[in-house]
Image (cartoon, rainbow, N blue to C red):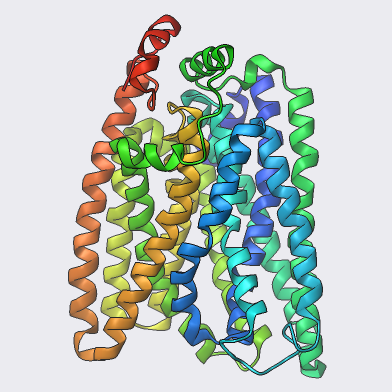
Amino acid sequence: MSLGKRFFSSILSVEPQERLKLMFLSICYFFIIIGYTITRDLHDAVFASIVGSEYQPIARIFSLFVLIVPLIFYAKLVDILRRYQLLVVISLFYGISGLIFAYFLGVPGIGMINTEQSAYRIFGWLFYFFIEGYTPFVVSVFWAFANSISDQDAAKKNYGLMVAGSKVGGLIATVFSMIVLNWNTTHMSHADHVFNHQILLVVASIMSLMVPIFIFMLMKRVPGRYLHGYEAVYKVEKERQKKGKTDTGVWSGLAMLMNYPYVLGMFGILFFYELFNTVLGYQRIRIAVAQSTSVSGMSTFLFKTTFMIHLIGLIISLFGTRWLIEKFGEKICLMMVPAISFILLLYFMTSYTPYAFILAYVVTKAVHLAFSYPLKESLYIPTVKEIKFKSKSWIDTFGQKFARATGATFNGVVAQYGASVFFSAHYIFLGAVACLWIIVAYFLGKRYEKAITNNEVIGLDFEEQLSSEVSGAEIK
């Protein structure tokens, strides 16, 4: 079957009502990824301009602790709000707050207008931590919502297409960003460069504000029976509502992360990927700084690599994601990701040129976003709400931040010893990480396939065993 026929058959194989749900989810993710694409590279450039790039490893470590308070508040919102309301509130918060930060970027003495770099400039740290929360809150909550209204079959059919739409958004965001940053640069003052960054942040904030509109449309247009998701979990949650057990407390997500091996395994695969990404990402920032003469030039370099990531990711998500999962299954596909990542890392370490870095970084990131990410998210489908929303927020925050802090520490230690130990240290350390990653992926994929085959719900406690038997689900 040709690639074109495979693409259209993927769309046509989706039921009309599921197609409508897919359309609204894809539009929301399209806007979210535009905002994410802009802010992810923007916050590195802004932080380097205001505080200094040498403090970025420290910022990554600090973010691990700064986000604890927002996580506790978020866990309380999970108990208070309905699933779609939670996504609406988070999107509105980031949209409005982003507009406020955009204004202060241009305020003399506070934002980027002040060219003096200092670790004591609080605004740079606040902006960095604010953007660092975009993934564990906005992106993570979107996927938690999507997982709660999708079953395993819908995930296989739809998630690749949904990610493909987001890659289009990423391409648009990177092209738009590069145009804005490079418009008439020969006659631009520093204030003009700052204004360009304000424009980008305003656009990213508006994208977040668009999400609630289409979430409300989804809830209004799609019949309720198509929003149940995994049926066994839906029945358990309905039983909980009848018994008034929906409020599980702010620490339940963290408790489940520590007590359920399945949830700890999902933490592991995210941690291992982010560790690889941090090692390559650190080189990316250094190359961007070395090849740039202005803050706009540095941002442009970052956006160029991001453009390639989204372009390759679009091809993978359209023609590879669904086909690979259906042909090989979740377990084998989960194991493919660390194998590919390590091979690319070996290539980069062997060549150690800017071209090798760009190729290794871009392909690794594209494989993760277009193939590994939707695959990883589908693992949440047979879990209870606490795992989907609360444990997931801890995983996406601490899995990512702890991995980045670990990677930053590793980069800092290796840098002190120079080139003499650079290659051997990376080979040994990341080789061990890759082996552990593959082992965790194997057992996690095996457990997921068993749960789906046996119609299990992962995350039920002992007291709910009787009610789960009534609903047709089995205790983990």
